[in-house]
Image 1: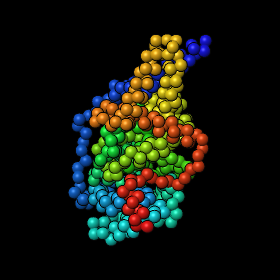
Image 2: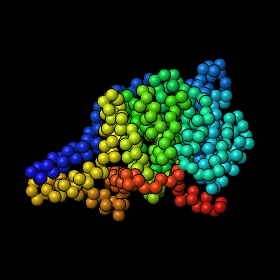
Image 3: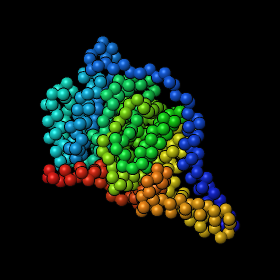
Image 4: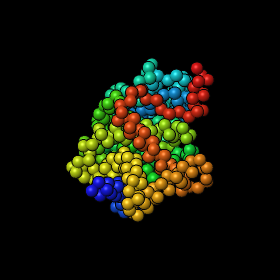
Length: 405
C-alpha cells in the first residue's frame, strides 16, 4: 500500500516535471497565433518636433542607482538620445546611498552639452534603503501618464518610447515590457535562458497577459501603481502583476530592446538566481489569488510557468529519491532512477570538466538553476533577515568602487 502511494506520487512528480520543461513551452508555441509580418513600423522623428507630438503621453523615466559609476554616464547619454519630445519626457536618477562616484558623475552629466535638452533630475537619498523604498518614494511624486523603470546598466533602443506611446493607445494595456538581451552573456546557458524567456513572454500574451517584466526596462500607467511592500524581492514581477490583477493586460514588444551591458560572472549569476528564487517563492505566495479560475488564461500560465517553477526543485528531489527507493521493486522506477541520476551526473561532470558543448552548457545552467531555486525558496520560507537592496556587482565594479573610497 505504501509502495503504491509512493508510486503515484512519483509518477505525478515526473509528469509535472516533463510538463513544465517540455509540455508547457510546446503548448504555448502551438497555441500562439502567427505573428503578423506587416507590423506598422514607427516612423523616426529625427529628433525634431512635430505637431503630432502633442498627442503623445507624458513619461517619467526613473533610474534607481546604487554604486553604478561604471555605467551611469553611458546610461544618461542613452537617455538624451531617446527619440521623444523633451517636453514630454522627464528623467529621474534616484541615487540610493551610493558609496562610489555615481552621484558626482550623474550631476556632471546635467551640464554635459549632449544632455542639456534632457529634463534630468538627480535625487540623492543619503542612506541606502533599497530599491523598493526608492521606487515607492519617487513614483509617488510623479504625475505623468506613464512611468518607465530602467536599470542603469541597460541601454534602451532609441525609438522605444515612441513605440510604447503607440502601444498605450490601447486603454486595456497596463504594462509594456521590452525585449531583454545581453551584450556579453556570461555563458551559453545564460544566453539560451534569456532567449527562451523572451519567447515564453510573447507566447503567454496569447492567454491574456505576459507575466511580470524585466527591470532592465518596462513601462506602466502611473494611475495603476500600488506601493510595494518594503520587503518585496522581485519588484519587477510584483508591480506589473498587481496591475494585471486589477484587470489590465501586460504585453511584450520585441521592437523595444533593452541591452544589458554588465556581464555576469558565475558568482554573480549564482547570487542573482538564488535571490530571484526567493522572490519567486514570495510572489507565488503573495499573488496566489491569480491562480483562481476567474483569471482564466492568466491563471493557467501563472500556475504552469511560475507556481510550478517554484515547486520544480522539490518535485525533482521527490522524484529522484522516490525512484531510487522503489528501484529494487520495479523496472520502471529503476529506469527512472537511472535516467535522472545520469542527467545530474552529466551536469556534475560538465561543471568540473567544462566541455565546449552547447547542450551540456544548457543542461548545467538548468540544473544549477533548480539548485539555486531550492536554496532561494528555503531561504525565504525560513524567514532569514531581509537587507536593503544590494544589486550583485561585477568584480570590476567592486574594485573600482573600493578604489574610489
